[in-house]
Image 1 (cartoon, one colour):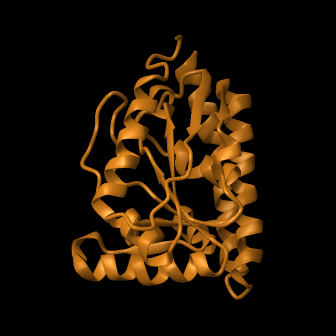
Image 2 (tube, rainbow, N blue to C red):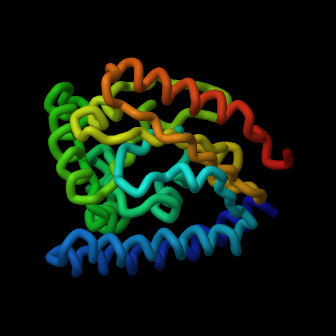
Length: 239
């Protein structure tokens, strides 16, 4: 039944994505905040449709930990779910992502309207410089910047190597880092068709001050909190 409901979800998602991708292309000349407000409606509709079609909802704790001033979000990366839903939890944000995603038909076209920071991950220091320059500019303009420090989706219960890019950006922008943990991969696994019913738990940690710290120390602090918080969350759909 879960597989069948997942197929229904994708059947409904396809025309929604095509529609918003075309809208995204049409509104590219508009200011970034306007584009963001329009395209994030796709996110809201997608998550609502996910709940209706697959019975997969979500719950957030720690909303009080989101400060008024924008900063850097460092989030665990387990599935596609968090890339969508974090737009509904935090104020407007720019996501650091690989530029190849912008070339994906329909999906990438709409994604371009969300004000992302697209990088070539093979570019090394050039990619880092892009994140630092554009990221600091976005934060100054009132945007949060979202990074997945492990760089790729990691199965629940496992840990990838945390990069220091997000911490370096926070230092450059004189901003805080807000760590985020969740268990989305338990219900929506990487490259898996089936979406299991249940409730995804999202936990927002206390802001990490960056002044006077090294990027390495900030990253270790965020990593320690994220991994401990993830370990405390249910790791099976029926838990």
